[in-house]
Length: 140
Image 1: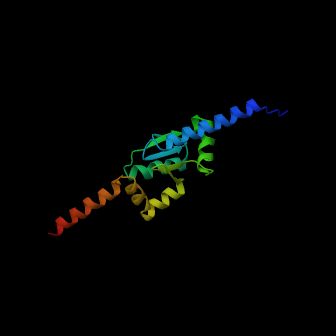
Image 2: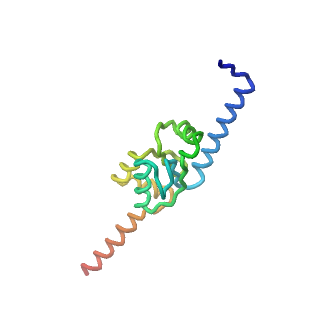
Image 3: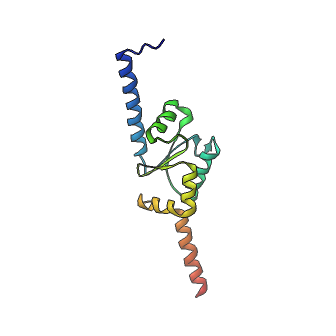
């Protein structure tokens, strides 16, 4: 029995649009935003944990949203990005990807460049610079 009347349909569309608008606001709220299972202090899946670890290595401050607490958010972020999996990482309001993509960007140095575009200096870059200046001093 599917009787979807005009009024009910408008409610669904309006509700969906509102969630998409809310997600758009969340994505742009901070330079780096992660939609994940769990929270950074307690990730609830290995992929979310891997994203947290990569961002921690880079010393990135970010907003995180637990999709397990809100089914509308969980589905809404997938619709918003047109990406079927969680976690999802956004830098400067742009969808970067999920766990595999973030790890690959970390490995090949692209993540440092993306962070730099957003005005964020990676802690790994700072460590590299301090170790280089330390090795220069030891050679003198």
